[in-house]
Length: 394
Image (cartoon, rainbow, N blue to C red; front, side):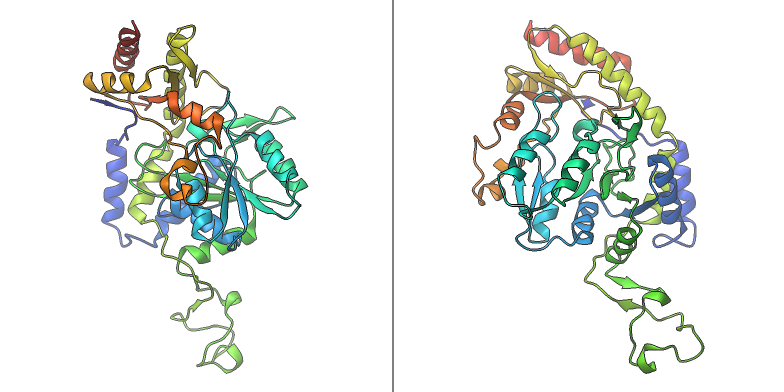
């Protein structure tokens, strides 16, 4: 069986997890901070906050940016539903903008058209997605966001280690905080770094970082500088000296239990050590697919070879997608479709979204298929996948 994605667990991973399981902490221990610091260094940002999963990361970002009921936020329709759901969780309104035909990413021209068609202040933010591992040009989005006083959340679940080249020819790595207010990553088993579940938020904004730390743990703080009042102390002052007792804490906001465990963090740190190795392998696999499918009449489009692409997915667009999908399954190749356009999900149709609203995304969806893409995919397996596709169309 060849799946579209697969985790890779090594002896080093097992050792890291076992050592943590045998330590004093299973959660809220030192491994979480170690993982955060190591990930921030890898991405190139100032701060990182580890959380339970990528969806929790998105929700916390929306909370930290104070998304309010009725506020409008722009997202693409080709992404996992969590990219838009995080706005709904806060009572905000999701407005979809179509994707670019060539990149499969949120089309900045479509976003600009939405903004220009409404009075300034109509929209509060944008959630661009580094879909399949291809990095969004956030420099351009940041300029647009500044013009309309919008915040940016970069959904980079598909792209740790990915980058785009800015106007000064510098590599800008996904989630580095130079353009987006906040960025998020996922550690689901099929992602580049797997910890079972888990996610990470990155930022260069210290105020947002501190707010995320509070919201991640029920809105509770244990920090003397943040304390406001306690009934056992006069006017909120400590009973003795300048120190509150060690047991004292305050809930200052309505937060959530979105913590990650120490053994998940240990696994994530172990996987992070070979992240570049896995990224190089993904890019090698992409090059083989690109070479095999270039010029083939049955290929309407493909991910191709793109500088900075992190290749969480390798997507081809084909005629008779369903026929190919079923044929590959018969050959024990389990390709996948990413994604059914979010605006056509029954939940979002309730808000008036319908077929025809996002023509580029809908056309892409009719033909897209994600092929096996993971670092332990062997040359033999990949050639078998390619051969089966060629035989189907022959």
